[in-house]
Structure formats: structure tokens, C-alpha cells
Image (cartoon, rainbow, N blue to C red; front, side, top):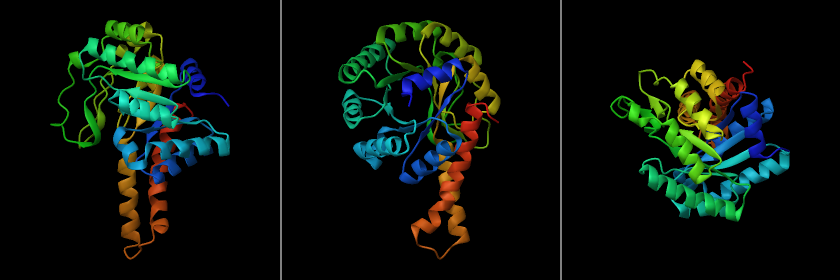
Length: 288
């Protein structure tokens, strides 16, 4: 079985993207893995600091490891949006396949310094673990947002190609998450912002590492495909899964208002999440 680095490289060369799906509970993991297995496509499971706190950092790492070994399947785990070296160390000790240090709200030089500290620590412990970092300002959070939550994306919010080149060279990260018009979360009743495809292409031309697109929920199919062709190799989806979770549970409770047995209600949640994941994985791999 190929490792994560090899699979990302393969996706990069073939103009495909690996789906990265965040989970907050075991129901989400069950749904995502079921779809990946059905389609025979590699998948990355993401857990933010809050999601790790809820699930248990070591517990979720063991769960992914067990699935990978039991099924001999390329499922991997990423410590998404980690804001301190202490939390990076926790994920590394637990056996994560990738970690993301997020210093994007720091000044450039400080972001470089702290990211480099994270890189040096991770590579000293286990060179096989991939280190991702973010540069630029990606607004929002993985919720349903009003337009007042996310103001107009300004030019200065976007990752500058020359700074991206400097950042990657000085930090020696494995993956870069740029700000290219993407936001975290879904805007209520208005379209998501368009991606700046040319900016993706410019950044890709100078960094020499695979690019990761955060805030994938709500982005149009056309923008996804254009972004992949321009250099995106991993795409994050979270808010759409949370919305599907809620939708599935509401459906189940409406259809079975007297039911109290979780395993008789939660299959509807799984099916709603599966529909989102299957569509995205097929799209990212250009098989629909």
C-alpha cells in the first residue's frame, strides 16, 4: 500500500485531488470510510483541536490505524488546524499521519519561525509524518455563516506568490494551504465566493509542494475542477458534512418520532453524509 506522500504525489501528477473530510463523531467516520471503500479511493480524515478533544486524540488515531490495517486500505489521519507546538506533539505521539500547524493569523516572520519549529520537531521524531501550514487569511468557521460573518475578501487576504515561495523555502513544509478566495463554512442564502484560480496557478508555480484547499464546502463544481487543474491536490470538506448530519437526524426523528434506539435512527444520518462524500470523491477524482 502506498503511503500518504506517494498518494498525494500521484494525485498531483494526475490532476486529481484527495478528499479530506473532518469528523466530529464515529458516525461520520463510518460513513466516510464506507464510501471510500466502495469507490476504492484514498481518503484523509481530519480532526481539528476541538474535534480531537471530543473524540480523544489517541482514540481516533487508533481507530484510523485499525481500519487501515484491518482492510489494508489507504485511510489517513490529519491533525487539522493545530495552533500550538504542544498540540502538534500530542498528535505526533498518537501516531497521526499528518499535522497542520496554523499560524496564518501571525505576521509572516513569526509564522515562518513557529512553523519551522513545528517542522523541525515533527521531522526529528518521524520524518514520514507530513507537515502542512497555512499562509494568508482564510475567513470564517465550519458553520452556517451570515454575510456579516465573512466580509468581502480583500486582495491583501490572499496568499502572495512571492511570500508563499519564501515561506515554503524557509520552513521546509510538505504541504501548503493558501488563501485563494476560499472561506471556512457555508454562507446562508448567498453563493460562496469564487476561487481565484489564477492565484492558485501562480502559487503552485513557485512553491514546489502540493497545495491544500481548505473551506471546500459550498464551492462550485467548476471551481473545484479548475482549482485541481491549477495545482490543488487535497480538498477539505467539513461544514457540508455537519449539515448532512443534522439533516439526517431530523429526517429520522420526523419519520420515527417515538424511536429512542440510536442504531435505529443513526443510519439515516450515515446515508446523508455518504451522499455528500460520494459526490465529492467522484468529483475530485474526475469520475463523474
